[in-house]
Length: 263
Picture 1 (spheres, rainbow, N blue to C red):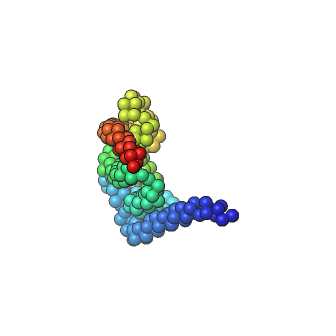
Picture 2 (picture 1 turned 90 degrees about the vertical axis):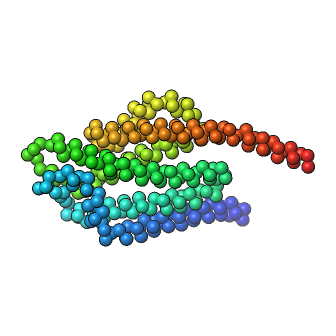
Picture 3 (picture 1 turned 180 degrees about the horizontal axis):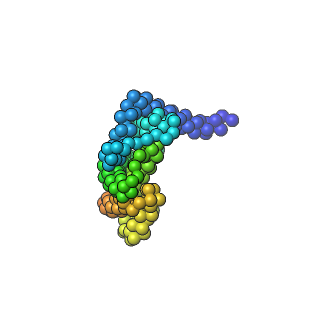
């Protein structure tokens, strides 16, 4: 019985640590959300500014549900709190898995973790400052002249959150490409040969993740393809460095064994 308990104890400790880190992450999200609740209306105005800029002076956004004026800004505030907490959440994940990594894995994982955060924020910024003005400008200009544009605030939020998430995830492509290369799943040259399929896949993903219009699909597919090329570029560099370091590591291990034999 004691041997069984000794074997189960590390797993229990890991589960307790995982629970504690999840609770810390949720607590940070809750604290940030509570701090931002007083500014929920201003946050929604900021999020709806790309559309508001193209609405006629006589038009405005509307709420068709009774609870929408409260729930919609609250939902957006909770999303903003989660996005702002992302570095801390990823830090908790890093702190949980770091003890099980080798030194060279830690040296590589930490820059990739930081880069993934920056790229996710960059994808959201690209959606807000580049994609939204083009999409909303197109939508509001092609409608019939006798149709008043009054977008529901809840539907608008669902639309922009979908694009925020799609572009944030799409900008993680270089990290995914580098991990596949360093993990041995594929070589940089092998990945480059898959370029035609990747380009087609980017447009298919753009079609599935964005609204049914050519502009938003293209604005997602093209950055995904360019980021794929960036991933191949940096993957080649890291792949070459790793191959150059492996013979040196092998020599060091041989020297160490020789020294031990001599002793």
